[in-house]
Length: 269
Image (cartoon, rainbow, N blue to C red):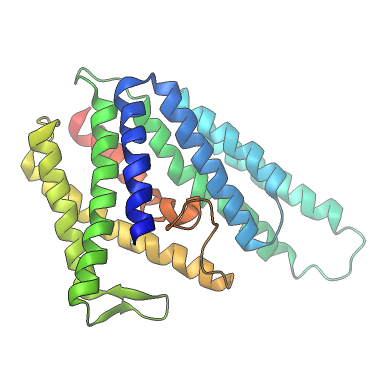
């Protein structure tokens, strides 16, 4: 846990400084690099290839989010499907057994949908235009505060009070008590954000948003743990001390990025 805390102490101030003081392109570059590394780790876990076409599609999707051309994303994904099927066709043309084609192609395309399509909404949040001052920085700071506060609350509550396992086959360390501790951390973080820098976020919206984000974060974490168990891996990578790989940090964020973006569209736009 000491390594986890040290990592957070080092990286969170840098992250918030880039958000509040830098031009949007700096945070987009940082987020985009993290998403691409997460996709690379996914391909390493899956061991099914497809990195070249997947990475090219990923760059195209992130660019579409950055330039606010969301209508191009479906075209990029459709092109990826066609390219992947052509790769399968030409690489298996002289084989008799095609039973591996569907799972292999599916696994390759799924990585882009899971890591890049969901994670790309972090980029979308960075470039929104709003009369609310510094709204992208406020939303993304809220995003990271809720995610990290939930992780911290779940860890310490689970360690001190955890008795009942939440999903023992998927993630033996998670407990029901930890879940409620994490949700408490989520809500506290949202309330701090409201009173500290985000008065435009009404309390009657902040609390439900924090709870839904907390629940989605847990589900995202469990889904990523399931993928790692399927690949017989403890961590997705070893890039971040105390945390594993980028994908291990993105797990609870991927499900929440689209949620926060559409929360903005419905309630703050």
